[in-house]
Image 1 (spheres, rainbow, N blue to C red):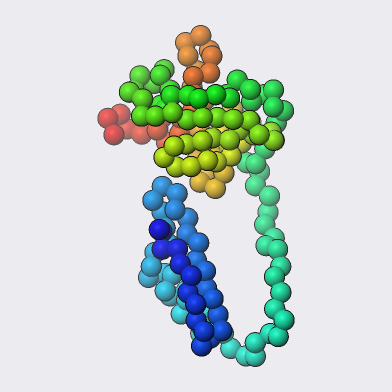
Image 2: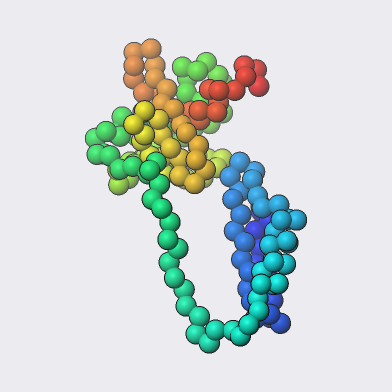
Length: 158
């Protein structure tokens, strides 16, 4: 799936693991992946280290990752029609939203479970996929569900 693989290379005393981004049908192009493996093999020169060690990956914090008081998220908790009824489209399914540790957790039947982080503009940032979800409200202003911003930006009829 997405060209994920484990290459075991006993003669080179190596194992290469590729974990691919498979969101929205993405993956690692096989030609680029094979080129990378070839580069790794070419770069492997010199004496092996007797006691190699692991070190944690240093990453910058993501400004989109937020934690807010649970009270700020309670109105969003529940099971919601997807897409929300105010959009006037036949429902395709449901999305379940729960509150956990200062953010929402979205349970999407077709794509999995993801953290959703409330942004200053009122939208929700989905971890890993970098998608933005927009709250949709009924005529009376009550919350009716969320929708991917790309859905709102698409051409009518597409």
